[in-house]
Image (cartoon, rainbow, N blue to C red; front, side, top):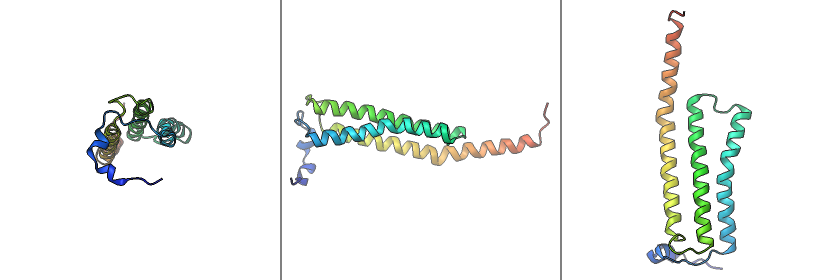
Length: 139
């Protein structure tokens, strides 16, 4: 089966109100992908508790943000899959998958930005506070 790549550049392909039914292979592939997105936060949380990953509060906050991202995108993805599988007009538009991907990319950027800018600042402030506590009088 040949894929017609020209259709990906056609506006009508993405914005048709009733794109039709998903093939079984596509539905299974999407279901596996979204299932992995839902299972990943559970696995990450179990690993964090068992192996003591993310003992620092700033790292725990980043892990919480990642878990929220994965769980939310998994649920929204399953909703999109349900609407596509049932061929619900307007709610099964292919454009919604593009919006889903764009939302995922933007959310990942914000998590990365927080990890790259805020987490080092928080850790530096905590270190400075520890250094100052050494020389302070304790009651």
